[in-house]
Length: 574
View 1 (cartoon, one colour):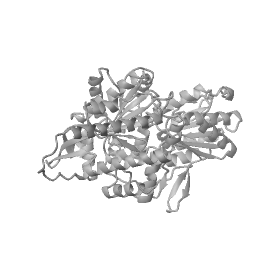
View 2: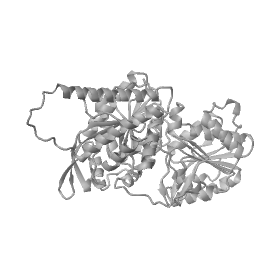
View 3: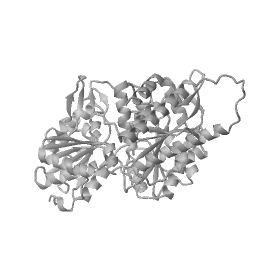
View 4: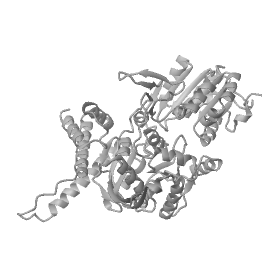
């Protein structure tokens, strides 16, 4: 006997964006619908409400959910059961048919790709709604995309969801609509869009502070040459990648210093309102994850939960951590996308994964708001590429057809292998040997603006930022960061005034390095952007975006000295 239909009268109340999107969906009643909503906004609740509506009016008799991982299958089934929709998360391809005890099943993209014919027959047996969660995964490989298309073409309704930026590549995603722009390229078109900036304004997500740490790094190449570089300074992509990996080496000083700062921030949040706040360290591979777990255990005095692979035991460990008061979790892949642990409030981005897609997925783990005033803090290496992504949190990206994936010299491919294999050391050990690295706070990024004058770890200046209150509104965060920076600049000016006067005969001042000049210009630009924000009330991110439109070039974290000078001159005329 089929299970009872969900009761719409007892369904949880919807947020404004969910209600507007639901009305739009029910009015249109098309075969395909795509909703783009920032992580933490409530895509699952929205999708289940649509499923309940279609089951109730007999448009469909079955629901199939497709998601990226085994753990998310369990999460989807649990969320559906809470609203009266029974989904079988243990369905296997060999079962062929779904049990009548369920309204449908939850699958992974890999599962569909392995046996699309099985799921096509299931879809044709009963009128079906298919919910494709994080639909960009259907573009990960041709077999997955073809499998999804073949399996679900007969579906009565298809609902696509994504909360992260799409990529630029040549693989069209099944059932997604594309529109050709003025540049001749086709871009994905969403039917409903609810971005991070909208959700932040509505109090649906937390403000995120990015604490970027630079520092000196030293390593030896496979040719025996010893090199040194400072994170955050202009370098070639190869040097950036090697300096980045050196900083992340658990045997150096950079990681322990950053983990100590992150643990101090977590303690501060727990002392000031977020009593159950948890932290997550995202590692590049499984061996490193274990090493980070040992480090944070020694620093915090508590054993960390380690999640290494997409298996049954990992799902259980995540569930236990989510419901506990434990301080730290360390993971490679399991919590990079979709996993719901609302108490996560401090993150350490200790991976060299570099794509906008992965970065947004990772940061999405920390933005889920539970009550007004909660903030999130993410610690990351001061690498131009990451700083650019952190500055563009509000950017909405579509899937662009016709542009191949661009290799940037960083190791996303290595990360992908690490997610699938126990032995994930790869060829990195053969390429270079990390000799040492030290950390210092370079800047704090919030709302696209850089704050701070730099501070060594363990100093009062660093503590000023680590000690920010845990319960703040978005506006209060901006006010406090501006005050911290003003205080730092005043203290620096006071110290200089107290110095003895320089002798009459003095050597010419040493010219600034390119890195120092660039950092100075970047701070000057951010100060002007902040002033423009107070005059016009425009968000910092929009002002930066307008400057990029007028002057061209990449985000300010990656811009050249000449580009920064041009933007400074431009904003002074606005």
